[in-house]
Image (cartoon, rainbow, N blue to C red):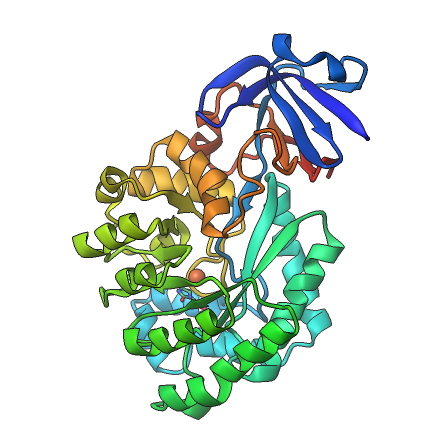
Length: 397
Ligand code: DI6
Ligand code: FE
C-alpha cells in the first residue's frame, strides 16, 4: 500500500465546516481517512507526511458542462453581437453553432486534441480534476465520433478524469434545414448507437430550444438513450421556456442545464426527480441575458445546484471555473459556499459520479490545496488563481 498523509490543512469537510488543523490520509489513490489531525488513526503514524502549512484543502474541482473540444473560434460573431445582432439572429443566418460545425468538420482528430489542450490546461491550472466534454459540433456521424475520440484522448494526455456526453441533437445542420426529424433518424440516432458501441458515450444531452430541438424530438433522443441504458441531461430553458427541464426530470435526467426561463412546474419536477440544476453564468454573461435562473425557488425546493463553465466558442468562451463561481454569486446570488458545492459535490452528482466531489473516506483522492484562508475567497476574487497544488487519484499533478 502506498500511503501518505496531507497534514496541517484547513480541511473543508463535507458539511462545509473547516477543520484546522485537519489531515487526509491517502492510500492507493483513494482517501483512506479524513478529519481533525489529532484524531489521525495510528495506522498512518509512520506514513510519509506532506505539510500543507495551514492551506485550505478542498475536493478538486469538477467542470460538469463543457464543449471543450471544437474547431476554431467565433471572435467575429462576438463583434457582431456587440454591434447589436442577437444570438438567435446570427444562428438563423447560418452563423452561430453552424460556423463552429464547419471548423470542426474540417479538423482532424489530432487538430481537435491540439486545439482543446490549452483550454483543458487552463481549467486544470485552477484545480479542476474532472471535466465533462460534449460532442455536438460535428452533426454528422463521423465528426461526432471524432469529437468524442478526441475527448477520450485528452484524458490520456493529462492527469484528469474526462466524462463524455453525446450531443448530436445540438443543432440541425444546414443540409437538413427544416428536416429535424430526418436529421435525428439518419444522423443523430445512428451516431449515438455507433458512439456507444465504441465506448465513447457516458451520457446523452440535447438542446431543447426554438432554434434547436422541440420537446417531442428531445423525447426521441431520450428514448434511444434509455434503450442503450445511458443517463440523460438537457440544455433546457436557456432562451425560452419549452418545459424541457420537466421533460428531463420525467426521464430521470442527471441534470438540466442553463434554466434561465425555468418555471415553478419545472422546479417541482426537478426536485421530485433529484435532477441537478447546472447553472452556466458564462453564457448568461456573454449573451448579456437579463433573466436569471430561479435560484431562490431551486434552493427552497432543495434542488442541488451545480456551476460550470459551458466552455464553448459561441456563448461562453470561458476556461475559468473560478470565474464561473464568482459570476454565479454576483449574477445569480448563490452564496460562496453554494458556488463551491456547485463545482464539487453537486457537479459530481450532475455527472452521476459517486466516487468524487467530497473529502470523505473511500472517495478518489482528487484534492486541491489553495493559498487562501477561507473557502469563500475562492468565489470572491476575480481573475486570480490561488491554487497551490492538485492531486488526481492520489498523485500530485
Ligand atoms: N447552449 C449554449 O449556450 C451553447 N450550446 C447550447 O446548447 C452554444 C453553442 C454555440 O453557440 O456554439
Ligand atoms: Fe452548453
